[in-house]
Image (cartoon, rainbow, N blue to C red):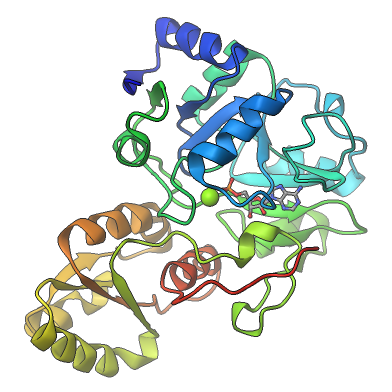
Length: 342
Ligand code: AMP
Ligand code: MG
């Protein structure tokens, strides 16, 4: 199969719609990362997404809809606090999980009585969702566990020959996946940190919980996808905290004696320190938004240019850095943590 990359025009949207209504999958841009989209009502299309990605079949998918889509067609109930969150943050990088039974293909939520829904703000994504007019399930358009894609080229690199069409909407500005927030209880609970932070949610609804399982302790995840080694480049990765830069430098020297192609991924303020030590550096950036936006592109670059990547965690730990750190820790996890089903 030829994989075409096309700019978003009325012709390419017609083509995309045609593929979707015939049960196929199309890669689409969003403001966070690229997604691999299929019809949420079509069992075979949903199964195809899991198959193409090699995604574990207990990791549910997010349904994407346009701004005027009637949410009650696919969810059972919208709690008042979720309504407030919708008003405050949508369209945008926030996924809300609602009670929902039997409304879309059962394969979407892997047997859970809930559905995760997102309304992306990316213009191209909105144009696509309006053109098809149905909810589109779209996990990140990368092979399972590989680094998420923030450009059409990243998608092509993972799926050349496996999908017919990539709609090219440029580089994603957000850079990390949406915040996933459970709206099935008394108050919202963050299941995956992202660009909409706990503090931002608290400002709107007063209270917001966080359920981020400690991977090292093998805690149960309410959001199954949170338990996997994920977002990982295909090179050895070694993670150091910002308080441990001396050790990172020592390790750089030790690894360089044994390997060709050792590089360092760090925030801008450490670049000169590592360059003095002779290291090739990948610059994560100097502020939070920049670090989120650059992260995946740099992890993908790292796997093409180096054998060993020394990663220094950013110093800042709050705000959207909670999400950036979460992705970095998973990208550098050394093995899968066996997870229990919920
Ligand atoms: P991805 O689309 O690859 O970025 O991953 C989607 C994320 O949303 C994963 O962490 C899933 O576990 C989570 N998710 C999707 N649907 C649900 C749901 N119904 N309940 C809880 N988490 C969900
Ligand atoms: Mg993903």
